[in-house]
Amino acid sequence: MTSRNLSILGLVAVLAVVAGVWLAGRQAATPATESAALYPDLKEQLDAVTTVRIVKAGGTPAVELKRGDGGWTVSERNNYPADEARLRKLLTSVAEAKVIEEKTSNPESYSTLGVEDVSNADASGMQLEIEGTKAPVKLIVGKHASGASSHYVRRADEPKSWLINKSLDTSSSADQWLRRDIIDVSADRVQSAEVKIGNAKPYTALKKTRADAEFAVEGLPKGKELSSPSAAYNFASALSGLTLNDVKPASELTDKPSAQTTFKTFDGLVVEAAGWKTDDKHYIALKTSYDAALAEKFKVATAETEKKDAAEGDKKDAAATDSEGAPPAADEPAEEKTAKPETRNVEEEATKANAQLSGWVYEVPGYKYDAIFKPVDELIKK
Image 1 (cartoon, rainbow, N blue to C red):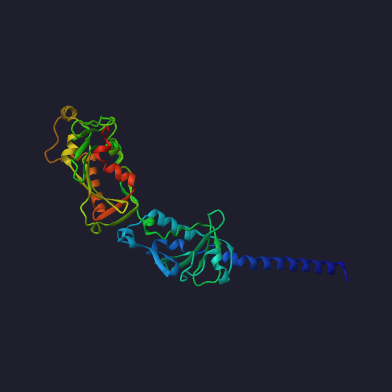
Image 2 (cartoon, helix red, strand yellow):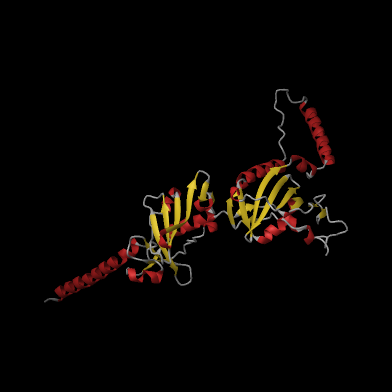
């Protein structure tokens, strides 16, 4: 055999080896590529999602979140608004989940990863169901993997289980999916708080001007005085960042409230709070309104300032007349006077807040309840 023939055979052999390696690599890579995304088409369909459901052991629905005209709500809490940021994070995590590794396909080993069928009364995982997409999602979410930044999962009705690169929030407590913000009135806005607890005599904590650092208290028991100048300052932050632990329809609390506090702000917001203590839990109901007279009383601009502004305006009008030679024609529209932004915004704030608060009673942290409904005995010297 000539050297030329040997070279040709050698080249053919090399090409055969290279082709074999390439084919083997392609065959091995194909399954990984196909399963790189847990749900390859879900990300483009998230806007179509209408329902998210979390099912626990025994096939019992634990939480159902539904999209309506007004946004997402929690079915188990009489369709109270849901925490949309938390829900969005869950949906995005599922849509972006990548498969790290294929795990067991043996049903006898599912419990080790927590991916057994949730129809099993002893199942340790949760089934996440997403509806509204072209193909509904049913994903069994098992245990956290090492580091808690990944999860073991199994697509329901499929034998293979997987390790994915996302941690999925499948909390089965409906209260965890509620929109937590109730109301937020900053400390600098609060002008007064009138408090009535049970049969006790009402008292009022108030600031007479915006410049006051502390609240004076009217209605103290005869011969008593505040324990300190700042004894009533808790009312300033009582409604600041108020959040719920849980919520229920107002119709479920039929007893009269045991405490009432009416807050007023310098800019005219009025918040009426009613409180109940039941089974070591603290509940409040809120009602908001706008008091234009109150806002007028404490408005920042003084009468003297307004007179000065008016006088300067007259001077400008006179100067304009002199420079132009004539006043504006009668049919030219005068500059429209608009309400001060502060006044207009607070009125809108009160209306919007009342629409959200009406019909609900909120379970709140005990320390917040105590700040809103503070007995006068806790303000005075012993």
